[in-house]
Amino acid sequence: MSDLSWPLVRAARLFGGDVAVIDGERSVTYGEVARRVRALGGLDAQRVGYLGPNSLAHMECWLGLPAFGKVLVDLNYRLSLEELAFMVQDAELEALITDDPRAEQLGVPVVDYEALVAGPEHAFPGVDEDALAAISYTGGTTGTPKGVMLSHRNLVSNALHNLAVTGHAREDRWLHVCPMFHVAGTSNVFACTWVGARSVILPRFEPVSVLGAIDAHRITHAVFVPTMLAMLLEHATDTPGLRHLQYAASPISPELQRRVLEWLPDCDVVQFYGMTEAAPTVTRLSRADHDSRPSSMGVPVPGVQAEVRAPRGEVGELWVRGPNVMLGYWHRPEATAAALVDGWYRTGDLAREDEDGYFFMVDRAKDMIITGGENVYSVEVEAVLSKHPGVDEVAVFGIPDERWGEAVHAVVVGHADPEALREHCRAALAGFKVPRAIQVREEPLPKSGAGKLLKHQLRAPYWEGRDRLVG
Image (cartoon, rainbow, N blue to C red):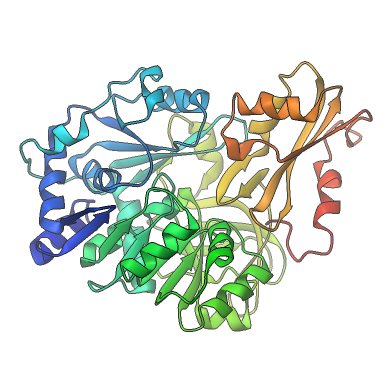
């Protein structure tokens, strides 16, 4: 194995004069990226946060901060100030790289990034493969976000697994538009760098800009979440020259899947399934398998094991094992012990395996919603709504949504205006966590004889007639 300095060291040595990254009007070679990254060794901080959209600096932080033994905490800039403040304090950040105007309220020294990378170069020290490289926050079943601890071994292994199934090459031109604060946005960064491929970075997803970038830069490879694909199809006027397209982060509807395959008849369209705790890649569904098993998650990629803990053909929880599986949750020993059992990670996803070893998602054991590729834990939203004086009881769950996969939906017992409740949520939560609709009623929520909320009774009518209970 190796540490995270290896991909860039190899690329700079073999392809130093090649263009490595295009960020807007800026174009830099692998030699230039390596020089800038080696200056990051001069940063006197151990845990460093990054808060901002995709950029050259963002990618350099992934390539360089862990390579110097530092821990990168990549923050979702879409979160509210309250949510960010919790993560900053929980991770015990010592420095922050950002141009976000909210930074002054977070109480962490802000780094002058361009001054830093213009400074003297430092030699990569060599880092133990089991050392902590990054902390990536996810929602929590208790309402408190958890920091997923990813090691050098986890991220290097994921890069090698992706190399094995995708075959990254020097002549590839990758579009990076999924946010780099998500593992979906960084899943190919190290693999692309290792082989000297060209990375084209867009700060945010905007359909017309994405289609324009694919054409202008002759993009060959790209990664999207299904919601992005739906928006691209709304604006596409012809077939882009993509050779390879990956989609991940949330299930895809059969109709959208069909439309994408028809739109890109000569493109290698593949589906990936994974999670932050697995750095992230677990399974892959090939283009050929889309024809015979379109509703499948595919099979485990080489280097990763996956098992449904039930007899073949029956539904059970999916467990995952491999060198890509996280170290655990930052400062959460109980949550770590519950998630990691005898070297296996319990995903909380309910699936079945067919006779040929292909997996099919059925539901989530965890009370989680995936909307537009973003994870939302119901309990986070319920905790905020329950603080409103007009709310006596509340249940939050996901319902089908053609554009976003799932939409956050709330049922409230009490006397409050639904729009006032949404405003209450906006003050404390990221926009994607705010319920799209809130139903207010007077009758109590359904409960078992022991008083447990029977949320499935509220949720079931929305999913009636569907093959799976997730979007």
